[in-house]
Length: 59
Figure (cartoon, helix red, strand yellow):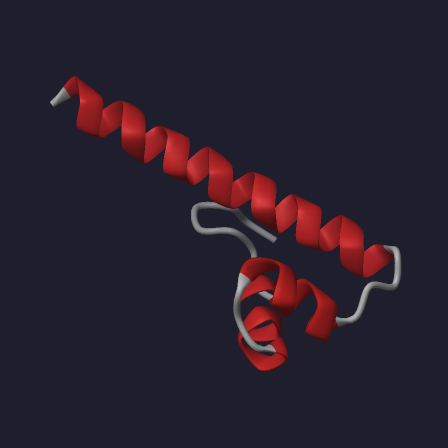
């Protein structure tokens, strides 16, 4: 069970880091289409996913 907890914490940390990186990219003027391509989703999907705070994170 310890491995499950550790993996869940790592996944949360990775998701938070990804949201932070996308926030930084958007502040630098990178378009949603480029961000989407980088994470393997459409422009629309990237905008929908990353326009909200990371799970477990407040505005």
